[in-house]
Length: 302
Image (cartoon, rainbow, N blue to C red; front, side):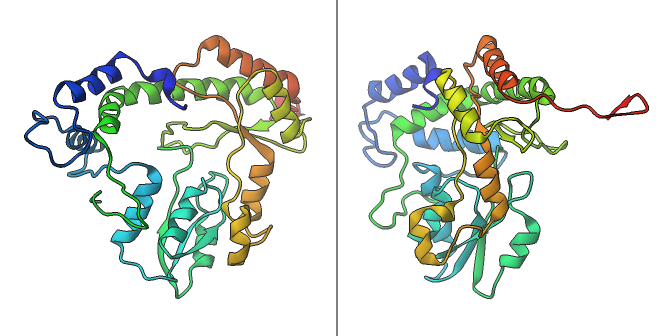
């Protein structure tokens, strides 16, 4: 379960508080027996304050948030919604489940939506764009297709505790990513591109092999996995999932997204990762990939 390593006494205390004060797990109702315990309301207030916005409304997942956001736009069946091809499949699924038509857009070297390709994909039927922030950074009583998107008091109790730790978690991930950036700079691979004026939370740390890396994506994945390093592949372009062929998508629709998926792997980055674990990941990659070739002209390294 992702995140289990950062669940501790603080989370347990918040959950225990729910049961001490009546054990009501619904965000609304049962006012007479809940003894003023409204964890979802508290979480919404704390999250809004953290984000510097007037209001926040909690739902059960990111997928639910997309569904509710699309419902709030009052779009009509058949309207087109553009999103990027390189994303978790739930982004496009939310569009389809809303009876809308997904249109996949290419990504650029930042792994975010390519503005030029976005412009090319806009038609008279385009009604919305879902931008995905790769490598980041409504009223929940509404439901659709039989789903209930209300966050429970237990989820909110965990969220309240985790929110207090969020800055620490992000700082640790950024430190690990900074170490990877430095340590892997001598290897002939591509590390995540970062705009100098932004800061990533490094939910993922993908590396990309090239024709001169000396190893294929699959071989690197296999070697690291066999060495006990938990690596992953992110993300298969959503339109390559079997369902999307019936919507008119085909291999080559977004070639840059496909090339990245075929040549990249995500290496471990998590809040409880030790320095020795980080060093082992780096040592293995350095041993498996070619070093960068340093060209010199008149004695000057380029």
